[in-house]
Length: 484
Image (cartoon, rainbow, N blue to C red; front, side):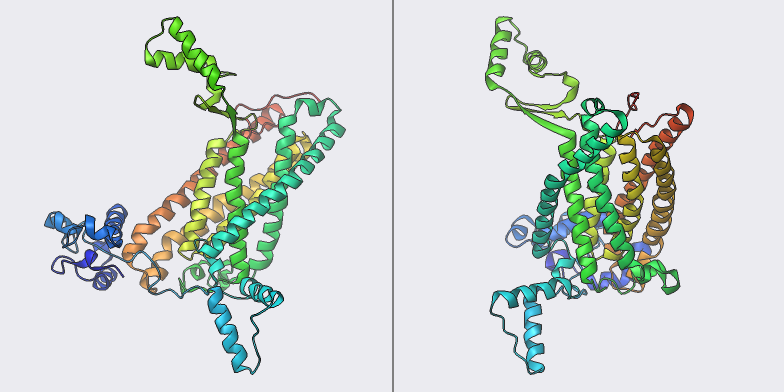
C-alpha cells in the first residue's frame, strides 16, 4: 500500500482503499490516464526511502497545489492507487519455497529429502523448472528469470554463429545450381540474408508446432469454454504452467536477439584515424577556414568515405554507417521489435501471459509463409515465390488483420474492464492508467500490420503488372532484376 505521503490530507483525499471503492461505484470520477500516471509517479517518488522525505513536503506533494487540482474526487491529481498486484496476487514460488515444500512433503510421507549431492540438486532444479506451476520463471522481471533469459539469448547467438554460415552455404549452392556459377559473386547480400531467413523459418516452424500442440485445448482458444473471457477471469492468479513459462522465456529471448541482430544487419561501425582528423583541421586552418560550423562541415566531407548520406554518426574516433544488408523496412521492423519487447515484458510483469501467448501464436503462424516466400525470392524461384506469396497474404489477412485486431485487441478493449475490475480485484484507476500503455502498443502493432500489408499489395501489383518479384520490405525501391 502507498505510504502516508499519498493520503496525508484526509480531508482532501480519503484512504486508497476507500478511493478504490468509490471509483468502483462511479467509474466517471476516475481521471484520464495522463493525470493518473503523473499522480502515481509523484506518490511513488515520495515513498522512496530517504529520498522521498527530503524532496516532498511533510503534508504531501498535493499540499503544494490548489484545491481544485487535489480535492477528491473531481480534482485531476486527487486520486491515489496501488500500481502493483502484490496486495492481492499470489506470490510466485521461489526455489527456496519449493525445497521447503519438498522437505515437508517428504516428512509427511515418511521419506527423507536429502538435499546434498549434485544429482539431488540437479533433480530439484529440474522439477522446479519443468514440473512446478507459477514459479519465478513465469515472470520475466524476476532476477532468476532474467538470468535464464540472458543465458538463452547467449545460447541463441551461439547457435546462430554455428548454423548461419551453414544456412548461407545452402543458399549459395541453391543459387549456383539454379542460376550458374557467376550468380553468387553478384548476390553476396542475398546469400547472407538467405541464411538469416532459414534460421527464422526453423524457429517460427518449431514454436508454431509447439504452440499448436500446447495451446490447442486451452480454454481461451475455445469459444465453447468461454473463449477470450478466460484471458481475464481469476486474474492475476492464473496458474502459470512450466510449458507457458518456458514458452515465454524462449519467445522473449528470440525477440531480444532479433532486436540485436536487426541492429547488426543494419549498421556498421568503422574506426576513424584521429591523425587524419588532425591533418584535416590543420589543412583547413591553412586554407583560412575559421568559421567553426563551416570547419565541421568541411571536415565531415573530407573524412567520411562513400558519401555523407550513408553516415549516421561521425566522431573523430569512429563513425556509424548504414550496412549494405540493411532492410528496406528498417524503421518499421525497429518499431515492431521495440513494441514487441515492451509488450512481452509488460504482459509478463502484469501476469497477462495468456493474451501474450495468443499474440505470439498469430505472429508465428503468419511468419512461416513469410520466411518461405523470402527464401524463394532470394534465390529467384519465381513459381515457388508466387505460391508462398499467396499463402502469406491469406495467412496475414486471417491472423494479423482479423484475429489480432478483432479477437485479441477486441477482448482487451471490451472484456478486460469487466473481468479485471467489475468482477475482479483491480482498481479502476490502475486499469485506466496502465492499460493506456497496452492500448498504445497494441494499436502500434495494428498500424504496422496495415503498413506491411500495403507493402505486400505493392509486391503483388508489381508481380501482376510486370511479372517481376520485388521484395519492398528488403529494398524500398525494388530490386534490380538480373537475368538468370
